[in-house]
Image (tube, rainbow, N blue to C red; front, side, top):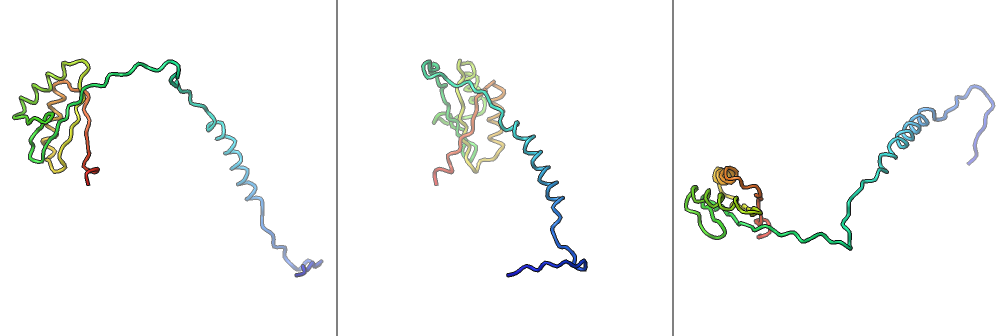
Length: 140
């Protein structure tokens, strides 16, 4: 294809205005220059030394505390008959050093009221290490 070049003034020149494009590119370049030093900051970590391994930590005892769908509380496989008995168990375990961990596994159909009462009893008796266990999704 051939390009027509005219020397007359009657035709309008149709070219893209590049000034706004250059302005946008300059703004983006300035933003890049400003944000680059932020991304290159190093985070200092204290990594363990391979020659001096840390001493092994003693793992605390684990108490399996289950709550059945009807509100029955099971302490390490033994059924707890009432709330005062559960609180005496909590007082006994809270006095130990290190304090054992409680792994609480409520049934998915239990009322929240039963779980809240067990958690409140644990808190009243100064139990600190309590975790929820959910293995139901793995037993399908």
